[in-house]
Image (tube, rainbow, N blue to C red; front, top):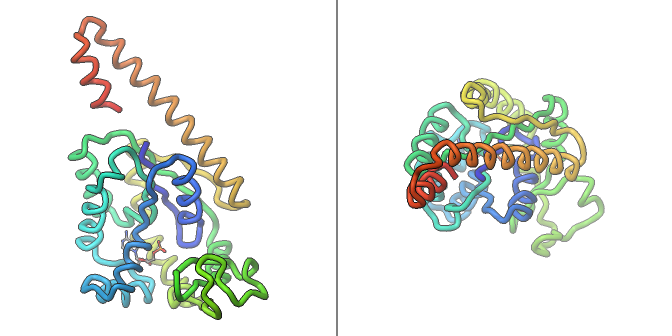
Length: 246
Ligand code: AMP
């Protein structure tokens, strides 16, 4: 199964993707992580992306499509993945469709995690990152701590430029103008399931897993129906149909 996590900045896509990746044993592909690594490595692409990210705007589509194309071609992506942060424009969604078609993948779902703006602004404002390892913490989790629980770095917590209030507002504006149309794109194709992102992390995760189970069940039913529709076909043809649809 391939899942695309969709939602506004701060809704919890990254947090949920990490947990799902462990539970479902498929890779978590985060464009934010890939871009931040490029910024850290000071690669040409990282230099271009860093400034754009700090302003809350979107990195150009051609760069993002190249990144995803390269990442999805890696062997660990062949049996499933969770996309976090991509696609974020209609151009990216069309490019992803083409890529999935080339990979013979037609089973995927978009999980729309929703929450209102006030909740998103509150969450982003309360985020702190570790300068050393980049891990994000909520302020209440690190209250009174001066050591990162992930890498052990001392006095390394800071407010990222893109989590500052004016940039947060721009990220929300960009989300509504450029990224929300992606949801319509997938809704028109019957690919979207929605879950309420307000609640504790585990509850939201259970909602997503419940949707995932339903999707798997529907798909198995579809698969069996397709195979039964051609009872006279040879074993080889039935195996071919199975792998084409699965
Ligand atoms: P995120 O933490 O997922 O909100 O991503 C942080 C920033 O990375 C965004 O504000 C964008 O500048 C950039 N970014 C991540 N994914 C994409 C994408 N698919 N398209 C364009 N820019 C992206």
